[in-house]
Image 1 (cartoon, rainbow, N blue to C red):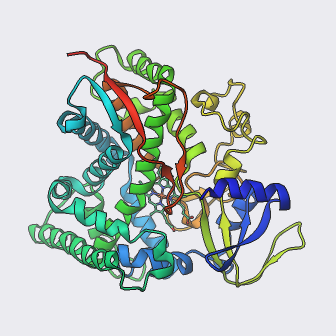
Image 2: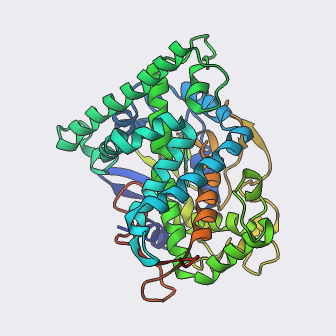
Image 3: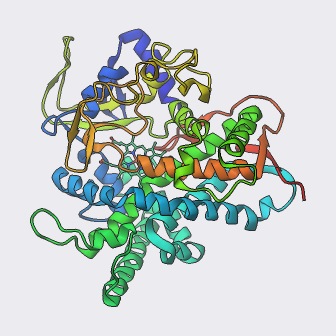
Length: 461
Ligand code: HEM
């Protein structure tokens, strides 16, 4: 029910590395920066992600992508997707995302009055899917979310329920719906690709267009069904993480109205009192807005457990342990991200701690080594990433499976926060500074619902 607490309690009893039984499987947890590095930066001959995740992801994403292919192919696919995420692309995303946010709040009945109370989680889930689909997949696909795609993605999502880890093969009712949704969504994308090819479109910027023009090292052009499946994977990969994070941000702001006001004043000061349309460049002028995302991910990283199969016995350096091949390895970077050794007053949500001069600044900020342990980088085939993963703060993972959506998520979340702050003031319904608990029952953690907040329009009509 509460994996981080379980990991911390056992760390106190047994040290950073210990084994427990999870769903009948011996699972070895290794926490702390060394554990993060040992697992996330493990060699391909030692650790394997696809053996763990494929039962869950292949029915949802489809064949021949991500974990339903050899790791070398995934590295090429990540490279194609990463190349499409250019500064130029991000520049075009900020206006798209801000318009989606403004128009969402304008048309949604729950936000029609001057003030009210709302369960923020489903609202943030919708804003996330509208903004991500529009930015990454274009207007044509975005418009289909108002018609068929929203329900189909909901059915796909059911495939990610934890019970599917054990019963992925079973004829469970939601699995039939999941399979139907997968086929239907893939066909929608493939038809769109076919149309675009027939039109002989040139010079577009979006992810689908980029994949349509990508070729594997062996000279084979990426097949249409793989493009369609990658489009599903991209949207699903970001949906849970980003929507949970944005819901946590709103809840944290409701618990600290003073910080929400500071965010508003930061924009007024940096961009001018008339608050012009937000641009990609503006985001870098808003350090508190950036820190909100960072600090929220520190305490609420949505992926609390990252797992790998062990392919050959792995000695743990400096200990007597050798992890055998019948164990699963589990990394939990959230444990070090809330450890007082690295983050003073770790349980306090304080975005100002990311300023170098703050008395609460973590060691990685004071030493100028945020997210990088030694500055050494390696190219897994999809761009340079930090070689070592021995950092206490890794909400986006590390090593060959590191998130390619980090920059997109940052742009998306910072834009959503900046636009929301322009429109509303939030507070807790009871006026307190309390924050509600976490729901760990799904694979991605998120706020317990109903996660109600009181909102009030900034401009009284
Ligand atoms: C991988 C976190 C948003 C696409 C990962 C991993 C983490 C992570 C921890 C590593 C998983 C592992 O090692 O097994 C997050 C968080 C996000 C976020 C916290 C938002 C706040 C996104 C978005 C996209 C995305 C928006 C797509 C645009 C991916 C992909 C992988 C990945 C493709 C690679 C999987 C692999 O190589 O095995 N993410 N992610 N993520 N993420 Fe994200």
